[in-house]
Amino acid sequence: MIGRLVSNVAKRLPSVLYRESMMTKPQVVFVLGGPGAGKGTQCAKIVENYNYTHLSAGDLLRAERAREGSEFGQLIASFIKEGKIVPVEITINLLRKAMEETMQKDEQKYRFLIDGFPRNEDNLQGWNNVMDGKADVKFVLFFDCSNEVCIKRCLERGKSSGRTDDNRESLEKRIQTYLQSTRPIIELYEKHGKVRCVDASRSVEEVFADVQRILDKEG
Ligand code: ADP
Ligand code: C5P
Ligand code: MG
Image (cartoon, rainbow, N blue to C red; front, side, top):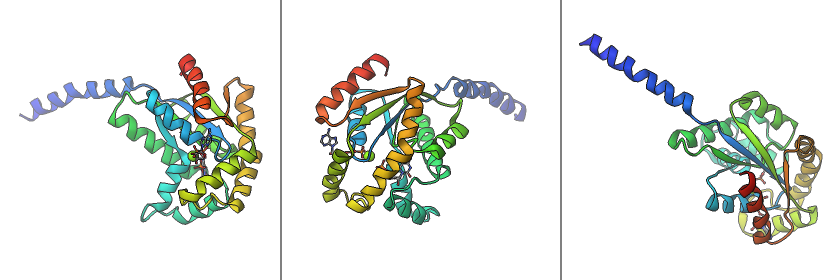
């Protein structure tokens, strides 16, 4: 009886391992741009038209901030309001978990838009430490937009977003963080020919037409 049980389990085991080894490596597009450049808006349109899952680092951090019992809630709240970048140990765990959960539910869902990450050197190092070899970064989709347009859009969004950082004071800090910490990361990827730049100052539809051209070619 026991012997038969063990042999049945043994028979099933290889298929489980086989399935795991056959899981496709996550294919990742990093989505970057200034605050209010339209990352979230464009990602939503991509999801409607292509087989991608949208993971916004900012959304994941806001959810963690709101989660009852989170040991990081206070820290995240103050970093967001100050427009500073949360230590990557927190963010990478949220991203990794979200990716794993998505792929466990449906292994066909291995294409990810990771929006608002990596935003600084610490983010990039954290990604390399945890995800190197475990996911392929295809390219960076960069929504390029002047600071003035970014601020204007965020202030407009602030009328209804309820976000603690869509106000003039936080926005000035967010723009500084973007210029000082995020732009150098985009430039780093640029040097490796990995940036696909879109002029994000135009209408949502015009921007998306460019996004489609990029994704149809190499998405
Ligand atoms: P991000 O995720 O980059 O911060 P969002 O997608 O949330 O930006 O967009 C910021 C605000 O600007 C939102 O209120 C959105 O409706 C608006 N918006 C997004 N794209 C455009 C666009 N191309 N033209 C005008 N307004 C836009
Ligand atoms: O991308 P989003 O505008 O939603 O980000 C809001 C804020 O969340 C950022 O200004 C920053 O404080 C925090 N954040 C972060 N690290 C990331 C992404 C967002 O600390 N990688
Ligand atoms: Mg966003």
